[in-house]
Length: 426
Image 1: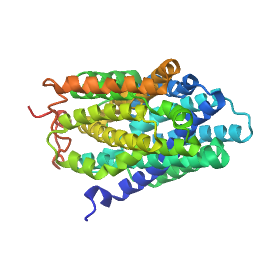
Image 2: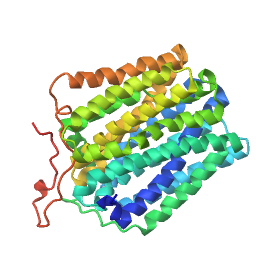
Image 3: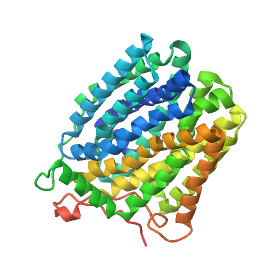
Image 4: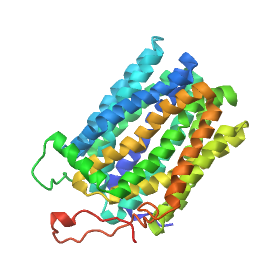
């Protein structure tokens, strides 16, 4: 089988490999954070504070991170953000190994790491179009999303093993090493400089420009609402420690496997997702059906009382989530001009990453009252109802056709023509 064209790009391959390795450490640490707080406190409500720390950082700093991603060298911005996260992971590892760690230390570390990620993530997404031709952009994103799932698969499983062997501190130490690798990879990337389309604006003027663009793009705003319906109401990750330890009684290793299962499902669906994004002309309907099935899988996970069934439900959860996420991300990237892509990505991550963080708080608090199984069962109906409402009548999401566009011509074009119009075919 011939390699996709995008995988013949040296800089993209280096970047892709470094990001996957760094994400393995990051995702393992997130899983370790949830387990660590639950182990220290025995409270699902306090475990949800990890998500609260992430939510505060995302909602407050995301627009600022996007503005700087469109003003500064994106490669250097990524390096600085990764270096800050490295220092936070190192401090948490030292506190854990010395026996001085408390639950609030873990929550603060999650807040600081997410604060760095609010500058990292917009630049990380916005730098991709500088490395690949526009006709390969959807394919690059379709590869990066399942690659992220590799990290979410390996990271939590690795965390479960390392916690069983040496406690959460061992996972935090591995995270330090993975951050160091990506900082080194970024140092050797060849990325062309960002070309500004006009005179520089103030930071807050840049944020306002990004907000106006998002508000006047119904496709983006409605995809954000669809994303929030799934990530807030069906926030399963905060409940996994309680489900693994108290409901299924499978211990830290079982917790690691259960945390990794959604990503295994996403990886198993990779070929189907890649071909769907490349070839389908009905992506709007596909993203909506996938969201409905995601909610169904969340309900099945909540109701599982056998570990094998819970793993199967988590596999399905990951497969449907990966399909919907890939289409949403590709649509937003293709629909956005390069000079504003960092800011738009930042606003979008307020739903794509802020939603799960807010969901951790909401579902964690709800589970402390009704129990984890009931909370996830009720929450699973959220994305089902929202997606069904979109499917029931014509709208910009349901009619969205394709995220694949041709390269722009070599000849110079007026600035107004540089924005790619990825609106749905009527």
